[in-house]
Length: 531
Image 1: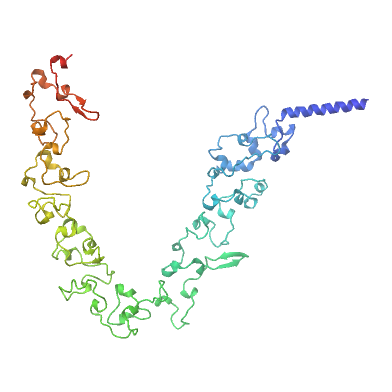
Image 2 (image 1 turned 180 degrees about the horizontal axis):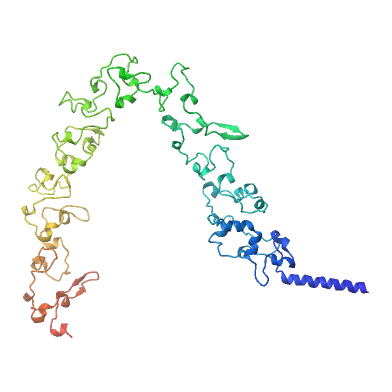
């Protein structure tokens, strides 16, 4: 009987302790923290009488503390800074509860202080976040961690160059595509690419081999001082191993113009543009020892100008205007020479490129004869048929315009029926004679009434048959200096003479959008103005 009572007591004691633990713990810990179960382990995370302590979290998760101290990673971002650990990583939700709850598809990697670019943006997270890419042995032991990666390319990628180049892959490669190396410029290498070498595929010189049981491509320690370091010598030691004496990088078959031969020993040393000409261009017979005529340029070259010059001066040759030091498209014929021609350049013509006047748009050829000397031979006559012959004889633009600036016009308006006075003197011709709407012009039959150019600022209050000049002059300011109030039905007397016009003549709307000063006062007894 005593043993039975003792057994019952033990059962109830156990149940009591179990119920007390259930009241203290809100639920089981996650798999990662299950080793902290039990009343005796509460203070591992909790401070008595308080909540979970971030300091206690970081005492265990030193890898996070290290990153925070270094001001690196997601936990120092604006999204996390200032938050308690338990806001994102709460506990007591059961063994299977995910403490991270990270949505990889929506996670902003910029917050982790490493922006994803190019191919990095589309690959799966676990392609990078895997144990073999983690240098720290302690972090590597953590299950499914996102910590421990470095930003160096070689911390994740195999060194394809096997320590023959630097460790910063980004100096040559981008994140979009490994091959080709977009940022590499051969100009920065010891061997500069010239001519046809620029078009050669890298693999032609930088062969792929197997090294250390891995594919390898050599970019350093390649001999390049002699052409024969890369190229076979087809001449079998018959000539100098200095290939550039005859050949160049442009093309192996395109020999230097003086390949193997010193042209200075002849009566015609090669200079300027002739130096780069293929021998066969001049020695067309195939026998370079045959004598050639060379006294004049036209002995070899066709007359591009089709006798435009030699028909007048047969003694002229190309070198009178051209030089071998520059391509044929350049000329030594300059301003000084042009000023000795029948058409001397003045004003804006001096700064005009030669081709503007001398290249025929239809044939795309340079022309120097019979191209005209009058303005209308080159320029469109925008006034054709619009200005009376007496003011525009023979369509001579120089009557009004100069070659300095087209917009500067010198025309004596007093020769017309309407002399310019006052403010009209400074007005541009276009203001009166060109339409603002369609640029149409009007010179003949132009009305001289003010209302033909100016809007009625008085909104029809006055009969403008007599026009504005009954009250106004053309002087600046538009003051009504000709208006006499004493000629109206209300002569000004006494103090009225000193009153500002706008005191009596106030503004009013004559229609919805037209506000004008009211000059037609219908009532002007004293009581109509004075209260």
